[in-house]
Image 1 (cartoon, rainbow, N blue to C red):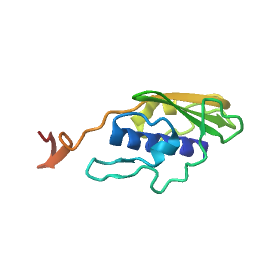
Image 2 (cartoon, rainbow, N blue to C red; image 1 turned 135 degrees about the horizontal axis):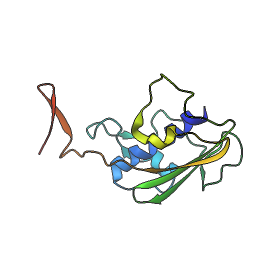
Image 3 (tube, rainbow, N blue to C red; image 1 turned 180 degrees about the vertical axis):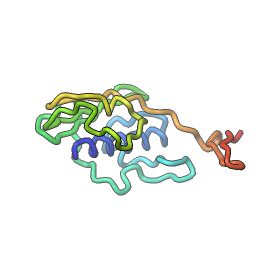
Image 4 (cartoon, rainbow, N blue to C red; image 1 turned 135 degrees about the vertical axis):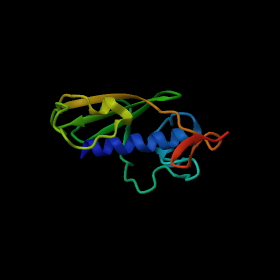
Length: 140
């Protein structure tokens, strides 16, 4: 459950970064920013459908399930969570993993753990891949 909430925070943050080009200073600001997740022609409110409103500022989650968020720079964020159990990175053997943020799937201890994540620059309307004859080409 905590992993899902961290993943939601990362998705909201990436969406806001896609819309502004800068990592949002707070999760509240990220939630009220228009951006995109699947392509720049589909702008949405970044928190659309999300319940991630109880994310604290800073880097010290105090209780199991707590999550904190901090912008570290224009394209880097830190998301911390307090986990009840360790994850040895093999508990998901054979399941699908989205490798957008590989550090999220590394082994981690129980207790407070932080992820320093580089936002991933996304295409803009000017260079978004367009499907042409089952191949992707870059629009110019």
